[in-house]
Image (tube, rainbow, N blue to C red):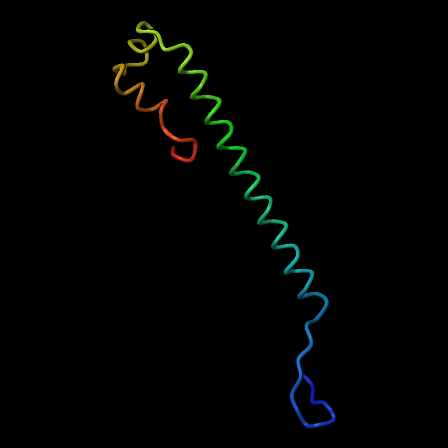
Length: 79
């Protein structure tokens, strides 16, 4: 902080502060990209499982048809 000619306190953002602020935005976009990628992968997995919904497979993995359909019908943002 410095004092101007009128005796008022002034503050100047340091260049490193603006760089840090920009890098946090970039890492925030990276996080969003990772989340969207994860959602896309979950949606693709669930579509694939829906296509091979076979009684034999469900018996092998130990789930009922209702449990299986509940899992593959979840929105992509739910685990």
